[in-house]
Length: 446
Image (cartoon, rainbow, N blue to C red; front, side):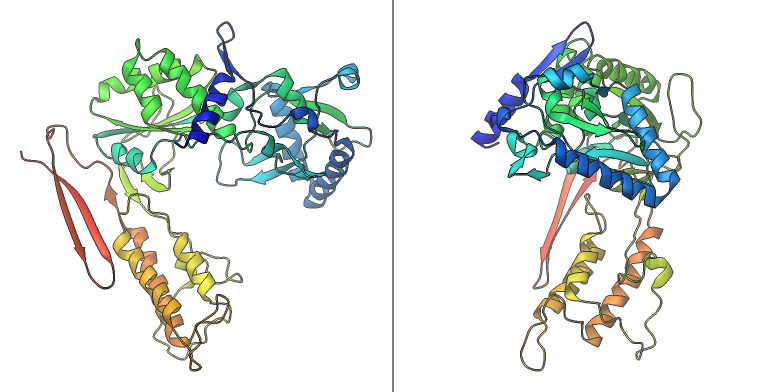
């Protein structure tokens, strides 16, 4: 960390207050500007509320109902509270209002509609997110996390419920997080304030992760293994871990849950490799495949695979497997909007944190190199939005056709069995005028 990040981290840690009786963390935000300078922007918040209501009514009754349900849910969970009229009138500290809107997550089975608050909105040059320190990146290494996930024969993943909301806001910070709501009724809106750390603040990730780690540190002497899982095998609201002994799995998960509960963090579900039915002491989902930090994992078969979804052009909204066909027809016309910019965009969407399909994705990057180096008849390079020449476009279509076959690739998650305990690290590397390459293997002797 830089010296600035170290200072910001100290500021966040000093602002975390643990309530032993309630088993909850209270966050005092890391202010780097005087919050009393924040303007009271009630008028703008009222205009934003009317705009949100108008949009939701236009989208239909279902979207409006889902929005109202989420507002009620937040009140029931205690992460927002309704302010009394006297409190709104007589509060002397800094007050600031935020607009809110929905984010749709159709792939989420728990929160398909999420309400977010815009702390990055500007009002008279004031942006709430600029009043706080961001703090350092406190997330564990994604690459190391996935390597450990493949290390042992049994794998478990856990999902924390509403992780950011698990940390409460101080009353002072709560009032700079006011918002308006009236449930689509034709009346003056009610004033609300958040009482928990929301999703979207510049400092929210650091606050939530550090509070969780502080909780694990408090119990690492009594529960060293579960505490270490929380500290080393967490990535934001996910816990992914692999272990040897199947008999210890339920107890390990229960101990992890116990520690997290001491900080008001709660596990929503656990998924265990090789199991498909729930047991009394473990909450297992019936999902066939789970997306584990960018990698698709089938827990029943305990295999890693890839989902490739690449749209060729803005007009073709279906995924590549349904739209890309062979390129035998050399006279087939290419879309005008197949450009260098779109090629780069599509290559960048293939997320491969473990590097398992690098030999395939490298072909796309080499093709992009050809496009960048290509010169026209007038010795001019292609601009980012120029249509690709026919020969380069055909090569791009062939690459798309080939890359969809990655979906047939099945890779065993675990790299060893229980009886193999002393691996040897084997490294290969090579280089050419096209690319450098390196490969790491673990080898065991029986």
